[in-house]
Image (tube, rainbow over all chains, first blue to last red; front, side):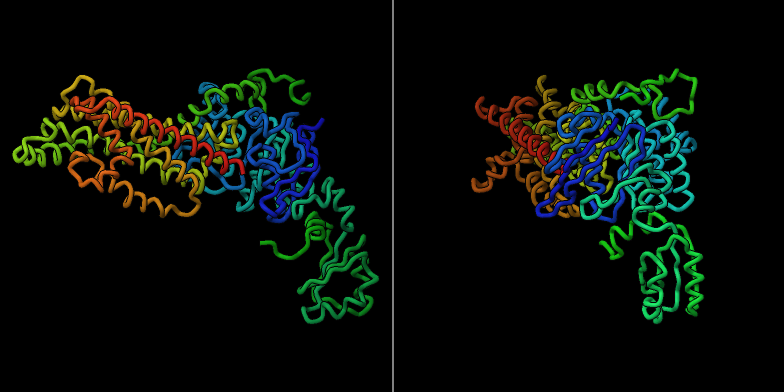
Length: 306
Length: 292
């Protein structure tokens, strides 16, 4: 049974269609990812789910309710973790959780207990009485996630949960999110980190220019849009382009980048043997499994989006 | 939904369970509480948030009346009373006291309805945090006005006590300033809130407001001398200033200043009208900005 259902969802700002007619469903307990480069329409989609952005066209229901009509009811079921932490930096950690919980009309007695539980979950118990100003980026992020759980939401919306964090902080955060997933919370995650999507998402859609360009589980997407393995070879930047013709029959698809050549092939080692067999000795070579990143770049292109 | 509802969690059996302990109110109950009380729930947050700079608030609230009343009321008052025998039939202290009270509360509005609003939309973004909860943008705007209004009431009480202490109050109805001054402050502050909410850059306009609107209002809107003491072509400054309308009402209740009844009604109407119009505009701007 789906908890979120979008049909022909459109959001326009003037002439620009930030979201350009997308359809998707999220099932209860599922961990669903919205992937895409900056400006693909991920955050706008998230805001429409919470009813804090009004759609231009299409239908959208959350737990069977229209967020524009029954906003308070929809948002009472949501935990929202925005892209940018918007904690009250002058208040202490615990006060941040309690004051936010009051927005949901929750009684103080419940919130005192809940705040302590969530601080423990976010590994911030020792920081309970610390002002938010004094926390590290990772701690602030965990506090924002804890705040999003204050009302025991059925659905958690995470907008780029780990952007700007160091690897240690990211792994702690993934671990916490994974626990929520195990408990059956529905997660909706936007990200442009492929490892994050592979870690957290059961199913995802790739968005580009406001449209959905692919949909499936990470493994499915790799199968459909890439090969099993990728061979990366470097011949030196002046030779890369010159040798490509001699490699053409060795892979399903070849991509020439300024610094290296990528050969998409089911068997990377075999392809490498053939390359060497033709007397083309690459300076360096690397055989690896195809990743979601290959899918992403194939679908949304390699040019910079600012 | 059949997910977790089907496996009820017994309280205390799994303390590690976080997402869904079942102790929170049902979402529909949360929503119905916030539908009625959302404005107050936001005001509650703002009052707690003000605790962060409570010291500054208290020092101002106690220090300002003492400074104003001793310098203007007693110091300048001695000269005025010796030279002109008071103003409007009372001593200068009694005349200027209500004016100082109203104008200093109105000026507090400039601080509270400018940079904190900019911060809510731009720097700390706490309006967006609140808008992601069941609260509506209208409730957030109303809560902002309610919290600051309560603060004005508290500050007015302190100033009024200072007036009593200085013997600047002669009428038993003077306690009504506790309502008049905050109303005058909101008549200026609510439109300012709506304006501040439209600002998207760094708030340089706010110092313009301070210099070219608030200061002239303070100097020329009848705080230190009756409006009629100014040439006729400057008197409009008073008529368009909530500060003047508030000051006149405060004088009526503090020492029984003679004022035609219709003019008292006009003062009230201007203050209530500006407040209501400002709140209406603020709700519109908040809604537009938090529901993009």
